[in-house]
Image (tube, rainbow, N blue to C red; front, side, top):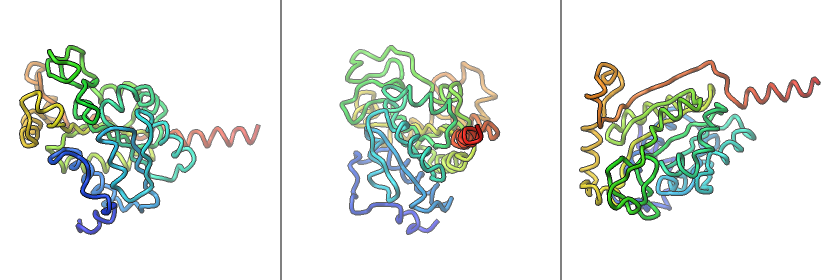
Length: 275
């Protein structure tokens, strides 16, 4: 696609961005912009919402309707926007801590309602902005400022959590597969007419996580993600032992007949008017 089409969605006066040089979040933002550009979504019909964290700086750089909200509460804000303006395309970006720790309750209930929002969870396994504390996705036996001798908490599988809670589109990629990120994001955004979509994109924080875990350079992390991710079609043919330590990527769920929440709510309003 033409470079200028993507650039039209950027607030260039706020560049360069504040992410660390080499941060994977820039790859995700570019994938989001390519997706909305290819889908030809008008800027005035696109809402990007976020909470607090490195990932949540993204709306500041995107020239559309944007919300930078409270930590863990972005889906609550996005739900309000969608209920008031159901014709809007809403992309809600969150970090792993933002979505599954302080925002975990909002996340599971947004999935349960099946409201037409595309949730993008930028999972870098750490609280990067606030000092490198362990998050619900910090791998066991890795190190963080709050896990100096190794994390012991079992990790959330975000995609399994989303499926169990009721989301109707669920997928995963990593920043080592940027074209796959774009493809899955396009499908997730298009899915909004059918309900709630979740795309987990595994990123990295070489500053806070990588330096403590022998992956201190951006390239070290890209290589790690590339070498340890497996497409779902191949993973389906492998044993649990062969999959140990690997990330399965691709599309996990796509249900198109569950009923989107704002449409169902409109039906309630019509029933109330007839009562």
